[in-house]
Image (cartoon, rainbow, N blue to C red; front, side, top):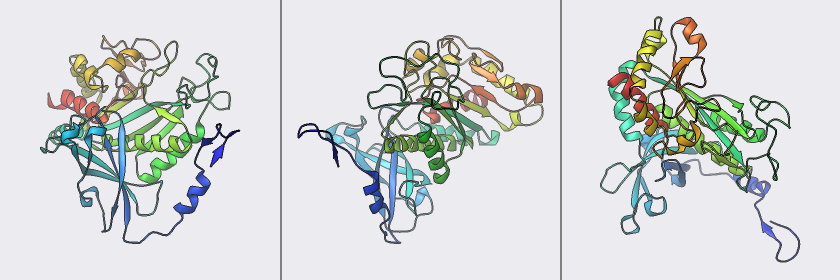
Length: 368
């Protein structure tokens, strides 16, 4: 399909109505399309490719190990480029539907060692060691929708929208931009089997949030990474980009985080507030360690976001408080009143690796 005027003014584009014909074609009952998904060498980029499997699959363990060119994903040299995909979690495919699957994979080098971007490997060890504490996680994933030009979706091209205030959980065409993407993503997550818990428009126009959880142990990373894949794929279908940049617009605008709600079985039972306070004390003594683990660039991304303004704490100082969204750790008011529940760590950046976040929190509060 083409659009434009004049022989040199045509722009190619694809028509989803044409695609729909092929999506309704009958497929062999004994063949499945499995989209293998992994994290690239940047620690935040998502890659994927499809494999036909012609035998029954009931779990990720049934899927074969596969390989790819790591020299094209910032993970290997061209002279020794093979990287290996080890399936670790499986979800329904809301794009191809039917019995087709999304397969999340761990990445290993040719020497069987985990790739540098494979944070799941060490996280799994920590979660196994701490399984008696039944750690639960919920992550609030914030993101920003961008137009092709990299400018926030819905913003005037030669200026800025009005100041922040009316956009958070807003309703109306002059307050929220990109709701179609949000609704489609929510349903795609539910169809895939992702534990999405809710969504809302955020403080900056064009910025949104969805929540994943509660998930126990390693599964928080599996579900959040697949939810991110779905977000990028859904946005792609709408011709929009979703960015996890922690500070997509400089100035008097909110950044984007991935606040982590966390509890152990002791915190969730009566009298649990004591264990929450004990955990906060341990977190206060390991602030720098957590800051390094909370974004893929060891704190450099969060440095732009954690300024002490726009509902953030200062990156250099640890703080905690009840219902305080300007603190490193927030104890929800309801938790303080009940005397048990969970804490919210507001420091992780929007582009954090959830495996790293979950690992360091459990290591600090349970194992150390």
